[in-house]
Length: 453
Image (cartoon, rainbow, N blue to C red):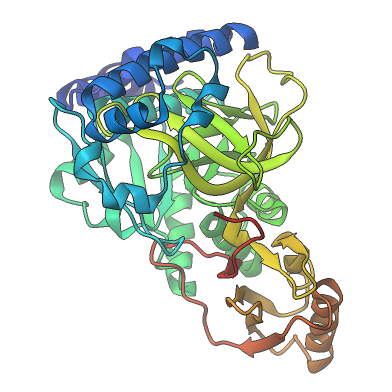
């Protein structure tokens, strides 16, 4: 750690957090202690915190006070996470309908947030200082797993207009002090990406942080240009905000010469899981309770796929209790070799809208289709869009190298996977714009999965 990094991490950033009334510094220290507890100790600690959280919510939040009474839930009698199943899932529609009733009586200052709406359902919600502090501390802990710290030079490839609209003078000065530089991810034209590569070469960051798709797009652009980016001392690239596909990880690691650390979370759900150097995607179990549920709402066993449902224990002022994220994952079946007692995801599949339905009744993950397209000559970009009637449109940006014969191979491969009954069209495009959030999604399905609720 350089002198500058040590000063920023131990003096500048703590003062910044103190001025904002965040408790992230002490929380991060506590998280670095509890991560080494055994799985059993962490589970017991989580249950006690869950019980305390529900008791506080039941006393102070009108919506949950009424709901607990209706469902006969007594927080004092909560003995395990399974007791949460007495409560319904929390959805975006529920939050919209009961926003005011979900604010705790006597709550401190609440900060208004909204999601980018890449799922098609933007949401307005609120955070208290406790929630913000926990999210900062969880991200900070995971950053330090990779021998980088706040204050190390950082390039952030982000695209949400929510953040970019806040680039006022105060934030700009803060970013300079913390040595963090933002590159807008929704401005990814070839000339702009050339400029981004120049900035990375000039700034020589120790870490990259951004959407998986944006990092991969920039890496692919560098490879196409024949530009080496692996000599600038980048130690890690943190990919978050969306599904990280194997080919994205491969191209980023190859071009920038550093490992990719996957992260799972969302603006509304918080920072939920981070990858350690041993490869596990560890849950922030100290303050996030994760349930994985099947189509009938029953908990699945480790290794089995279920919908991610979270209860964030630092959200008492605007509670997220059994919040249905719309994402799918499976829990690991063996402990991580890093020695941390934190549970881990074995794999995260992404949103339910990353899955495709066929007319024949099958459900397949986006990767099944992506593999048929990504390595074909001349393919620059692509996107699958499935409509409610199950018809699929492949939007394709490709050069002259993609011949009619290659396109016929793509069509034949996709039709083999989808079945002849599933309608498929291929549309050549000049450009595929990103989502409003700045993400570049490979697959968007508007067809409901079987049993989706």
